[in-house]
Image 1 (cartoon, rainbow, N blue to C red):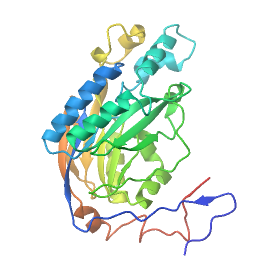
Image 2: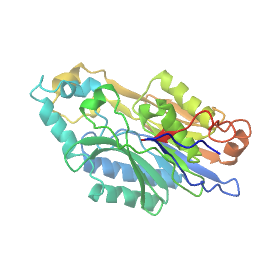
Image 3: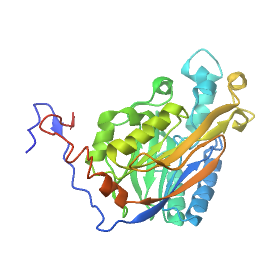
Length: 323
């Protein structure tokens, strides 16, 4: 029996996940595509076309990058926005981003739901979410094959200068959602460096881990392989390939844009198995779509040796609690 939480703490109590009796296989797609930068409607059209193409290849879980709608506010370009009052054009640039952000729910989320339903697939997409007061959040939306919005997760802690664009996420522990292939969890970018966030997903029974990102570093590759090995989960990590030329010609911060490198994000999307091996990717230097078939029995076999939320857990020594 686990020890009772101390005064002022609430222990996370999770229902046992449904684990399929068989060992199903599922084809997945990591969509390394650029947004139609700062244009929500055009990006949604591109998203629907890419989701349909992935579905035509047999994908039943389709993952898009962090902040795909209407684009990731790269520090090399949005630097004046982070500085606040230093550039008179910073405010209009942020206003354009906010104007093209996604309210939840809205016509934009309905469009993504239609894309998921048409693809008959689970669809994960990162968006700039516009809250009721106007604050923006970095949010992951996960839709079911029937178009239902299963989860909207705001990034718990925006990273470094992202905090000048996005507010912090809700004080809610991440949990996986059910699917016919086993529970699917999602963390965005450097949330994946938060040990307790990962453990919360593992504890909820996660078997497929979605990791949209804006990190194109070599270190990120070590991270996603570690998560696969640590959790004995499949990892679908997705980034964008973005160049300076993809920004609209009337973008407000032209001076900052001209100082930015030609390639703003080189990609690095990959699909990783529970033993840490690459099933597809990493893909660098171009837009593209990675496809792989996940044999879910690998998770069960791998957890005979290591199940960090099960037989390799010591709840009498360590406990995950929330305020």
